[in-house]
Image (cartoon, rainbow, N blue to C red):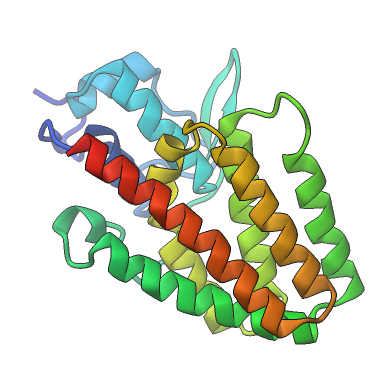
Length: 236
């Protein structure tokens, strides 16, 4: 029996994805408060009824979402219990929305965000985008760190629009793709392609070129969608 009654046993399908969503729910509902240290990976794996590799991957997903932080040699801590989620996190599992539908919505939001951002972005925001790009280009950067910076960049571009609703909607949909990012990032050339796409978006936004920003976002997210579809087809 599960040690924690609030944790439901996870069926052996989409294990890491299901565990990540359930752990996220527990954090957002306050079962694990900000500052709390999570139980050891072995205990969590037993509680959720999954293997340690699935548990480890789920923890990485939730950390990439900004709710956890790993202090190596010490443990995993909750750093936030707030997330702008206008769409239920379990939509991926329930199948309410297909991946193509989510991508279409994400593309529409991020393309418009970049277009507006190109007209409104400040010098300080441009500098921040360039700093994120520089961090992502550091040799030897881990996949987890790259994925986190990827999210920061997309959010910073949306923020340049000055439209908070647009920012929140974009963040909600983007968060649903974190679980896939950890899979496709290992594809040959994926990081290099993603970084090149990010550079084109930033340069267009920084130049105040709305049309170029829309094209750059479309090209970038189309490549991401192809990789995720390839992953889903190979896993089926």
